[in-house]
Image (cartoon, rainbow, N blue to C red; front, side, top):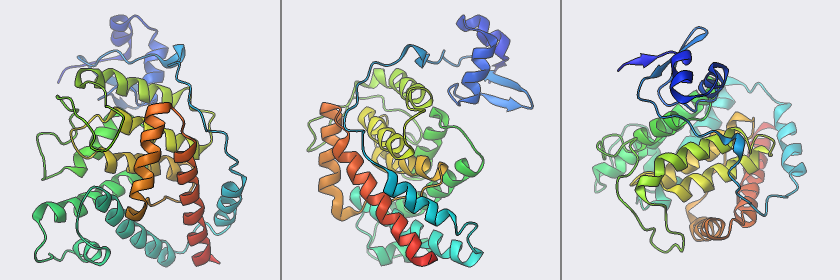
Length: 306
């Protein structure tokens, strides 16, 4: 692949060299690689959408009180750093339950205990190879998201596509990490995802909005919007739900909040509030669901720490 520098990219796109560097630092130029203080940009990289003009979206229902959530977070923070044994125990429990529920929402038939066994490297008789791969892949995707946070990597299309590639690894190689090339409908939903030829621009706008217009929002709001607006675009042919829940927790973990698990038993409510947000732009019900789960998660962690 041929690469160019920021100066050449600025001339190509008609923007300043400084602006190109800012976009690189925000992770909004796909495939850009940093070498010290310099950037190498794929020569065929498209010009990123400039969100400084604003998207004009009017979300409603975002004015919740997060003081209780933040107070619980502060209580947890007093125990940091956690002991290695406790951290490992909480992490193992999180991976098993997060993987089980996220896959179950999408139709995977492995039980919670079967999920735990598969993650220990044991094959379950009578279960498909795909269900085993979905379990292992989801665990690997969680670890990748945690690595992005620990490395302070910015959210970018590139990282989202890498997360998705892990979700479909060994299951659908052709579509793993690749935006869909056909139109889709979502069973049981009123929302109709955008046409496939609109996905590239919409994903650029989503990342741009995330890095600019959402900057001053509470992390729980940002996490909720990131999940909702990503899955509204439905950029991949499959694996959008699992990817969106990973992105939600990416945002929470990045800001020091405990990750949440949307349980399979909450699937009907979860789908209903998502569809409402997509149709009406009212994120209130979905934000309340996410907030409830953050409180539940924080209380669980505190019960172990205290």
